[in-house]
Image (cartoon, rainbow, N blue to C red):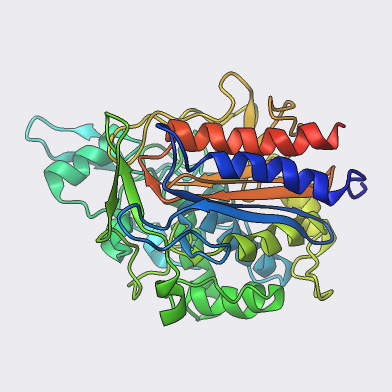
Length: 402
């Protein structure tokens, strides 16, 4: 592996050209912050647009975002650290670390009376299954059964960051399918059960502080709140409407390892750089051992299982979504793996994922480069945001290719 030889200024210029055009025209986004890092340093960090369309505050490089599911990789890193310490067995019953996981049942539809039909699972949930989304948990905005539990039985939304929002049945027996859902929130509770500390305290002590990620937290500081971007909703007509009331809780009952963090692009690039650098921080601290990184980046789905497309069950929260349709994709600990070279130029075996409000990142350990793209738009898989992100990534790889 080697650091890209193309000049950083060339990559930055190509990336910035995409970012600057994103906040203009009929298909614009309200604002975007994006960045690129090599194994050595952040080589591009730029922005365009505004934090809210109805306010004068411009987007800035240090704007704070609710990063939603890009939280998952950080919680997964905390779990891997416990594996290194011999405190977590990925294949032991996870109920050994959080007994509530031993109480979960499998739903087999609804009876004539509309009540859920439940049964005991055929096997215990393991933490490996939580990290790979094969435990059986789902999301109401991607699954009809969970959506029915919400509308007909009052199941709280995960956006509430409440324990009640996580007390859902499994959609299938553990280990038999892939289904994207609240698995990483439960993995965060496993971390808490082992350490006896809240997840935010664990990741701050063991990941965020060593990496210098001072603008990343489950609870925003006053400074972070003042720099936060506003959520926007794109209507069917393409118009964007700011929603100043939409926010993840700043005093959450549960530190949601699946979606609960706030952060900045600059902070997250430090996390990406650590993964590129075999688990090492800029200061030389070993956040993860190199052998753990090598283990984690492999496919951990059983047999020939692959990840599937995400159907947009609640249109206000998500469109139908699939990364690189038709391409086989698997799951690492805890990232998506593209098993073939992506149309953007990203090589096979790279790591990536996204967040509900149209945040996207990739980690290319082969070329030792990665990037992060942040907006605050719902629903997920917003066409303009997705095209912008893919153009951004493509610009980086086109420049690398010369």
